[in-house]
Amino acid sequence: MAGIRTRLLEWIELPERRFAARSRLLAPWHRRRFAAFGSGVLFVRPRLVKGGRKIAIGDRCIVYPDCSLSVEQEAWKLPGARLTFGVGVVLQSNVTITCAERIELDDYAAIGANSLISDNDHTIDGSAETILATPVVSAPVRIGRGVWVGHNCSIVKGAQIGDYSVIGANSVVRGEIPPYSIAVGAPARVVGRVPHPDAAEPGAAAAAPRPSAPPPPDAAEPARGA
Image (cartoon, rainbow, N blue to C red; front, side, top):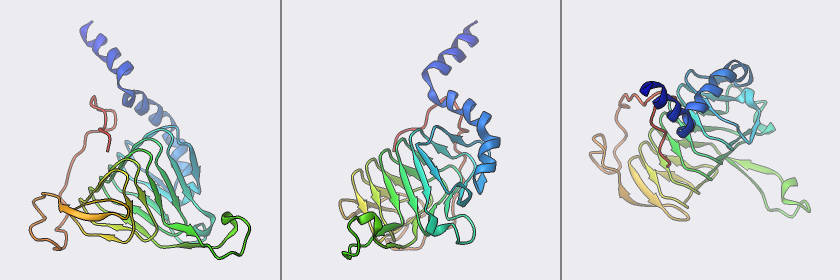
């Protein structure tokens, strides 16, 4: 009885348990909907999915409720998946991603709630009465392996965030952030270094990725917020 009571309590108190059950049920549909949809993915009640055939989601990713994933029509004619998630990527609730060219989230990147990732923007040239009718400009975005992006951040076109970096809450990232950096502000500026065994010298190239084994999505412990 104690074991049954414990499992029931986990089902009530840990939403990840319910998310996992729902995701397993819907996985066959998602595998038809997306360019790739890995094993063990938690994909829960997205607010919007646009251009799913251009979105590839790796194994053991977690996408919490109310996220928006959009590949805009400008990218539909380009070859291959244009928005890609590596293994173990986590999006907390209400993350918005809009891709018109190329956005890559490398393995184990974690994105905090209410953040925006966009590789595109509208021009301001006075050619239309509404900004939504002006031409779009874009530049690829990459968020490296093991990067932690805090809540309420904006990652804008052309941003390149190096492996294992940490981006403080409420920051705006444009341009390049070197690997193993701590960056904060609007625009984000490097203010420190992440202690990491591969980060021996400032500015050094990242060493070969270290293997890691995050818990499966239906593990007892919920994912921690970024």
